[in-house]
Image (cartoon, rainbow over all chains, first blue to last red; front, side, top):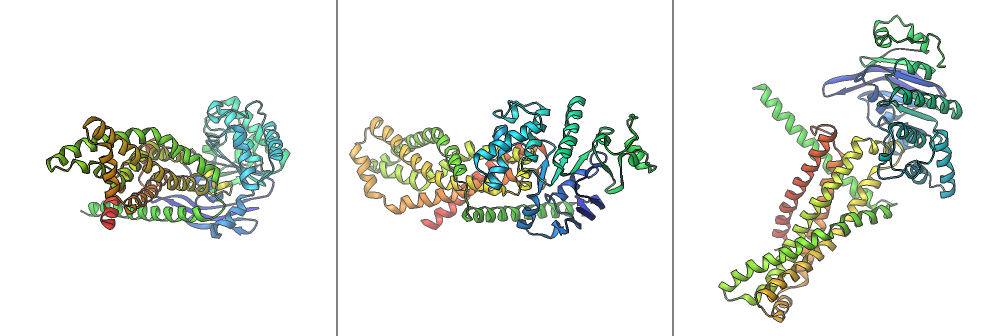
Length: 251
Length: 261
């Protein structure tokens, strides 16, 4: 379980996070939504330890990562998989080497096992015949899939998705969302998705938390968020006049 | 008035922060360079990149530096009737001074700028963040291999620069201006000692540290402080890295020169 308590973060005099409180339960797929520039990525970077909050705590199963040393933080990070917004594939490596990298460097597995796990991961995300290609030779959607394969290859307990469909067309967006949902069901990780994709995200997440003006103003099932009476949530969720499915549960 | 003081104060604070971060970066780099395990495969790759791929530019600049030195020194020495000292003049200038400095400046221009740009792009495309969240230490993968490779490559490149420069001087002094080849090399042997060679060697090591420190730091911390964002930040960092490395090489050349003289 991840418990975020009263997290504050100030950047150049501007308070980006103003007391974020959120509890993420094991095995759930939660989406943190909010407008661009609203602090979602800052919150994600704080949770994965890339930025320290000014005040507040972020604990993983009781261990507050804002008060641990680098070795303890790395122990927690070994449970992570992260799909970065840009994919963050190492551009001088092939797709195969990108996916094999954490297995080689973190676990030092034998090459035969690495090979089997890399091809399993590629199969899971539906990528074929790209293992010898470099990231620059892939389309946007393929890059995201390859990055997702790398995030999942270590069989992490917790997977973070930072705006996983940014820059993709609607068809690819849909396929990446479906893939996240499918991998979550197959592997059973705890998933945290940072997104502003309305209404798509309601079909993916089990629970949705709305970050507005640096605080979580509401969290609940997708249908609770869709039917929210809070003006800030309504304004964001219904801004595009989309047909949002009222049925919750992420299907 | 308050605004002016505020601007000066904030610029000063930013400068102090930058210097502090740079010092910590060097300390971390040195620490991780001696802490096992080292990624020797990456070190060898970087020796190839920093060293082998710089050979052409080192050959070209070394040869012409020696040739120009020979031309200028010949005309000066002739006025004093001391053309026999052309060989030692060229060798001492190259080995003690010009070899380490020019080799460092050439490697800064060719490879240092590329290092900064590569690290900067890794930073803005979240590849460095990715190493952190994989529970891996980015220093071990992208900084330390460059640091150790530079400590290996710089003295070798400097030695090659010196040798090529001496033969460039030989071409002009002996083949073009007619000094005897025996005089050229014998006088060199008479006027040079091991200490001259060691001065050049120490300088090349110091310059290796300066160039990799500045270039890697600028790339690794792209987007920090007032350096901007995105492609513009990478471009600014690359320019800053080349300018600051070059200036620091010359400043340290003077400091080391005055220490060893």
